[in-house]
Image (tube, rainbow, N blue to C red):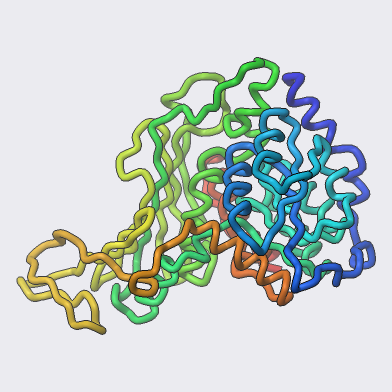
Length: 403
């Protein structure tokens, strides 16, 4: 293993054995946060995603970013440049967690670090915003649910689309039967890229390009398609019951061992199928989710959704039962854009809505929309999909997954 990776491993492993066995009594008493004050926040991981979160937090008056942690000096300096004046910098996340003035932490590190860091943050009595996906494997997902339930702390997973009005509106039209009987979801998250970041020091290859290696994550399914799996779970109010899949490394033969393409089909209750795919050699229609009903199809893109009515015998298809708008079409042609939000209201970056709710949940002690249970379901679905592709066998949701 590369030297950079070894140092990354070393700084997280010491002392985690005790943390993994936490009991409810091990958690500090809550109540340090004063609702009238800013939430004092620390962030662990200030790479590409972490720095993006820092940029958003900097513009949020409800939060004060006062501590940053990263093992890569450039990343740490980037985070500190976006934090409050006088913010503390750390290379050991455990030292950051020892700061009793912090109310909450954001964890934006490689996937394999999510569980041990979350456990340590719970032990330190911090509210947690944990980036997706929640855990590296299924046992971790099940155990983290138990630990969070025992803690009484706010625990939010970074699936920001659950907070975005576009998806709320899509869920409404499903409930209002605009699409009719839904039978399929078609989800994709494609890129035409080797998905790598430049590395100045070869010893840091695995630390920087962790997405390429199974030791650290689940590849495209956990790092890209996780959002779409969570969206289907959200829209269906359910989780998959089984999955089949195929994956491979057929294009980027550069030493990686995570897939550069994967195709899965998840089976949901009542026979609803959801295909979830990612290809790293073609970016056509990069991100999209299509919901197929017997009355209409909804196509969700980055910041909008289109409705395509089904038409039979040249009859007009009703698009919007509220306004009465119709399309005179004989086949599926141009879609009608779905309106959401208040007229004239600018739509914010979805992560802003998620962070705003994190603050509100801390102050009001309510459970986030994207919580440890929904995070568990997404993580288990991801691991099932990868296992299906690895073994070329059907993976089935077990009863103990939902305990």
